[in-house]
Image (cartoon, rainbow, N blue to C red; front, side, top):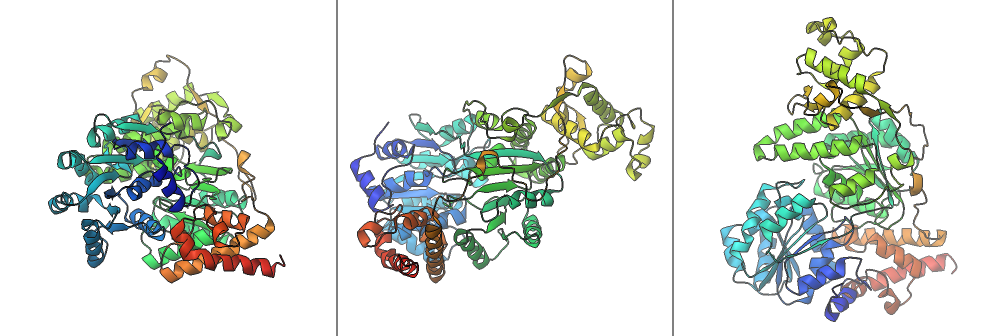
Amino acid sequence: MQRAPGEARETLRTVFGFDDFRPGQEEIVAAILAGRDVLAIMPTGAGKSLCYQLPAIVENGLTVVVSPLIALMENQAAQLRALGAPVGVIHSNRDRDASVADWRAAAAGETRLLYMSPERLMTPRMLGALRNTRLHRIVVDEAHCVSQWGHDFRPDYMALTTLRDHFPKIQIAAFTATADARTRGEIAERLLAPEAEIFVRDLDRPNIAIAIEEKAKAKDRLAALMDGHRGEQGIIYALSRKDTEVIAADLSARGHKVAAYHAGLDAETRNERLNAFLSEPDLSIVATVAFGMGIDKPDIRFVYHHDIPASIEGYYQEIGRAGRDGAPAQAVMLYSGADVARRMRMIQRNEEDGGARAETRRLDELVTLCEATGCRRQALLAHFGQASGPCGNCDNCVAPPELIDAGDGARRVLEAVAQSGAIFGAAHIVDILRGADTAKIRQNSHDGLAAYGVGANLPATHWRGLIRQMTADKLLVADATYGGLSPGPEASAVTDRMGPYRMRKPSARKAGRGERRRTASNAAEVPLSPGDQALLAALKKRRLELARERNAPAFVIFSDRTLIDMAEKRPNDPESFGAVFGVGEAKKEAFCETFLAVIRSHDSDAGM
């Protein structure tokens, strides 16, 4: 293992307040400090930001950090300022005077880290100005955005592929949590020197119990799942802003403490809800997918998807926000063919960016994961090129699905598709098979088809499940615009009877109130005594007050992990306060007395 120099370790302790690196961090820091180009693939919550922040603070030069998300830039900059690190931010949504002041500080050599959006960095004027600074390196965060194969390709990021031409002698480091082998290769080819060092860390998060379920009565199911997590916190992801509001209102009406969070809210409301999430131990958030990026909250106990994500990469990143403390956590995705069709329509609407084919491929990969009958985690890690055995902590491992012969049923589906002209979606094909009497059936004279009613003896759930699995197995393909089904490239294997075709037996499960579908992820409470829990609540209350005074997110003051350590250690003087996890010199000076006062007051009230 490459070891970081002593100065880096000292900075880790005095600035960041950490006694040691997390697994995988030290080698990356050492490679960056040695001047090599680096591509680092690290799981969500592994601490990738520190890998480029620490070298920037150690060295006497400027590091430019490119990020696609304004909120992420602002959060990281606020955290660094609280550590006493010289940092600036430039993006189009920021006040011009503030951006100018940060640029002047960087040009004068007073700034170590300068966060910039890609569109501001890649202007001729900015590129020219940077040549006259002590530019030491450029860091591309969320580097999968540069790859057309990546799950979140951004056209603005494509311009970054010319960075090597503009700065041939400048070190470039790229970081992401989600990139398969093809995406990694494209990132390295487009951004880095040929001799770049590539780090791919263990992506497994074995403490997260994974389940993917058929979507039925989704609001009831979410409420039942949350009944098993009362007093705990989690995130429920939904596809649209409107969905977050509707779901939050429904869960609140059922007695759950939740709030909606999305980009349509004003900044003050978003900040208030984020601070509440960080300060109140039982508040959950219903959010669109950006929520959670850059927030180091270790004790999120569950992540639920009301709607399917856009890709396996997005899914991995989102569930990775649960259980960062290593304690058991739960991830449940609700999945339906209607969700897939909705995603396909979104892809079609966005076709003008040229990425529709790649987006469709990524959605197909996710559908395949959803329909998998083997270990979910094994399939998930294999997508990123990591081999593993069955995990024992996913729904398919805990309760292996029963497989039934579906060859005849698959042939009936294909016959119904062909006889109706291969232009209708799954719902209508199911109606044909079940002999439904609908206006659409009558209008198209489909009650006269040979396939009409041949599947009336089986429930609609059986046929919907079979059609989803056939789509995942490429026996059927869905039209991107309207979702119309047609025979796929593998259909002949069934129609020509070249082998058996088996499907998962449809589940008859009905979720009950209070159900705790949590396998190994049950004992998830923070391991604190009742007295320590009370102190932790007091510390969070004071943190929230300080955050409001500064109009900043609460985690900028201290992370939950720091407050938990503080509640356990109960420091009583500046020296012991400085030994708390995440307390560096700047935060010790700024916050020591106020938090020591909270501890003294709590202990006095408790008679300790």
